[in-house]
Amino acid sequence: MTALAKIVHTAPEIEAEPDLTDGFHLVIDALKLNGIATIYGVPGIPITDLGRMAQAAGMRVVSFRHEQHAGNAAAIAGFLTQKPGICLTVSAPGFLNGLTALANATTNCFPMILISGSSEREIVDLQQGDYEEMDQLAIAKPLCKAAFRVLHAADIGIGVARAIRAACSGRPGGIYLDLPAKLFSQVMEAEAGRTSLVKVIDPAPAQRPAPEAITRALDVLKSARRPLIVLGKGAAYAQADDAIRALVETSGIPYVPMSMAKGLLPDTHPLSAGAARSTALKDSDVVLLIGARLNWLLSHGKGKSWGEPGSTKFIQIDIEPREMDSNVEIVAPVVGDIASCVQALLEGMGQGWQQPPADWIDTLKTKREANIAKMAPKLMSNASPMTFHAALGALRTIVKERPDAILVNEGANTLDLARGIIDMYQPRKRLDVGTWGIMGIGMGFAVAAAIETGKPVLCVEGDSAFGFSGMEVETICRYGLPICIVVFNNNGIYRGTDSDPTGRDPGTTVFVKDSRYDKMIEAFGGDGYHVTSPDELTRAVNAAMDSGRPSLVNAVIDPAAGSESGNIGSLNPQSGIKKKA
Ligand code: ADP
Ligand code: TPW
Ligand code: MG
Image (cartoon, rainbow, N blue to C red):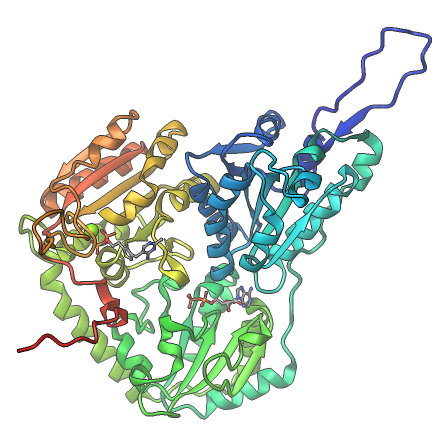
């Protein structure tokens, strides 16, 4: 329990009053009771003292420069720890700044709680123009998994408990908790306050699959000639690493990891078909999805990427029943938590399990080796300015030598190429733009990754991507975090070669040429490096990571090397108006 407010009496004849507590302390006590040790946020009215008191009570309170980054930090803390990450903001504008992160957390199935102070209900509801007036609860609702407001100090315990359970149980997601300013100063007896708190028991209960769902799934899997497992970030989140590895190895079924599932098994595993992804998807006849949705990232389970219509049967493991049949028919839905479902499949396979046909394994192996061989010379070029491939070839070696470092990655070419080129070796080491392909997660994810895991962090950032959260380098320096940011500086978005056809302004996708992002971190006492070749890049990143200090490497990339929208140029609409010949 934190220090409790005490009424000081000067008149001895008055009977001693009981110890008191208040809304501030109850919020802190409720979080601590539930094992939540860190708050990410931005201070201001009415939550400035909440942050101070939480710090005084031993919580880690990490103050950012913008709420979106604090929110992203909270979201990825949730992904890494299975406990909801907490983001704390002020009312209206701070709340709105945090909301993007809350919505993104919900979209990605990360457990997080956005706690925002808010203005007085009476004034907000009559729209009388309070300081930072906004009906925050109503605005948050459609953008998160659940939203709650607490009006009485005595309800703080139950409010926090509801938020935690809602964030973690079933499909995880973002929760909004609205705390009006008046709540914080409400006083109640300390003992009553203590008993009002709730320690959430089993916040994410196991959800065991129905035995008949397991039998059905195994029957479909046994009928396969060309089976494939797709591992998604739900599988990474579930922390069922040993069971998943056992399932892959016992079944002998090749697998493809989605980007944040990379490293669940090492990308160098003989059954990894990551480097033969297109062939694996197109030619497979039965696909077992584990914590991966058939959304745009898997071409909705149909079309060219999946071969002839109807040629692929899907088995899906997911905790969310409504995910089944979302895009195509799921012939064997397995609803439950991944640990239980994978365990049940393993048990069902038993002794007599038949390995998949050797020709399928060989096809994928041959394709994988051919693709790797085709890529190899590109990764070894020492040309200056660097291509994406050459720079990523250097970073690939560094990650191989430092497999416990966490890789944060965003950009377009910088993202798509890094995902393919940099092998991961351990679970939950690759954090990226996720389901929305959102730019701006970089520094928030990096800060939380460093704080939650204590491991070194390597951020591989497009120059545009970095700009969305770049001011947080000050936060990184202030907390002295072991984060090395590499900015892939190609002078712009996708490429640095665009121009304004009228000649008036810079092109819409280009930035100031030859910018020195390394000087940004130097302004705050971090270490800047400026490199133009893969050898220099290797030396700089190794030095930065050895030092464990906040560092930023400005890596000059050929402005002409990138392609429009990276790998997803086909999603870019084209003008329907044809130019006259
Ligand atoms: P990816 O982008 O890597 O393909 P998605 O975010 O699309 O992954 O899918 C993750 C899926 O994992 C979601 O449908 C979510 O419901 C599911 N999920 C998350 N945690 C669990 C869990 N513990 N057990 C089962 N399913 C889970
Ligand atoms: C919140 C649209 C997708 S990728 C990208 C933008 C602006 C930046 C690409 O340039 P970068 O990478 O980072 O320099 P590179 O290597 O190709 O040069 N706003 C948000 N999210 C998205 N996805 C965008 C805009 C976008
Ligand atoms: Mg760029």
